[in-house]
Image 1: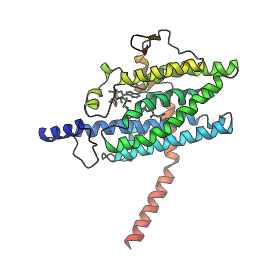
Image 2: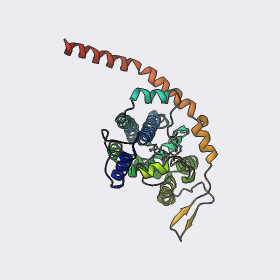
Image 3: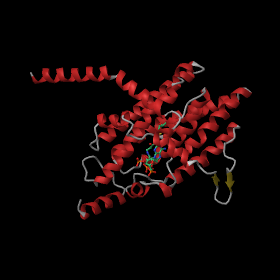
Image 4: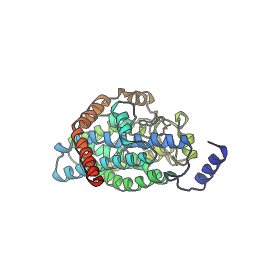
Length: 311
Ligand code: 3HC
């Protein structure tokens, strides 16, 4: 691409203009957005599994209805995001095939098991809480379709976070056994939630370009810090302890300083060696096969209607 067009593009970004599908954009901008949006979409679809696992075992009809609504929302978020990725020229089929072939990334957090009902509370509270931290700035992303998809997603995400926190509050104020369930879930979901924000800024391959192009508005470490600062006080309200002996409040900066994150665990989970990676992909492949007849029927119907209209 010639330097002049690139300079004009960057000037539009610097002026906080929205880039739309038919506008000129550098190939690298298109590539990194297709990468991020498709992985975001995959995360939403795979993310249905850990929670879906508890829909039939929810403790009350109200909890069941809220969880059912949340899992359906995640599916919808995935579809918005695949649609946003298609505006960049990718096809949904090729993105889905990459996921099914194990060649695509999705958020590390969904490779952990949901062992008790309290995990559903911890996921809503921590995972959706972290997702909100990450997705609110994405509403101001320079690429129009992605930013607009995020506005609707964030509205639904706040309901997800509230219902999760309410589950944790109910358990934390319940019997000793329920409190222990809530603490056990916090112990298992705390560190993987911090890893959701990505590697440390110094190890982040894409942050420089994503910040320059206003795709990423805050760095991985900045968002992680905002999440910790907001969440530690919530744990105190719940009467639960954060599983980090090094956690301490720095009154000089007003931030909570936390202990070292196990980046080797993060690398292993991303490389496919997390607790549930294989079963998540196996379940996705099975669901895709089970749904083949729907896709074939829809294609046959569309072809017949096209022939009827052409006749
Ligand atoms: N899980 C898996 N891969 C991760 C990751 C994570 N938690 N964090 C980073 N990575 C990957 C990146 O994709 C990149 O690999 P790639 O080059 O193969 O894509 C590599 O690690 C280096 O990380 P970078 O920081 O350089 O990558 P990014 O600039 O893309 O930043 C990100 C990572 C902050 C996750 C960014 O991609 C992002 O904001 N993505 C969109 C939001 C998102 O995916 N949120 C998590 C999904 S959870 C969710 O939304 C469901 C909720 O509704 C419950």
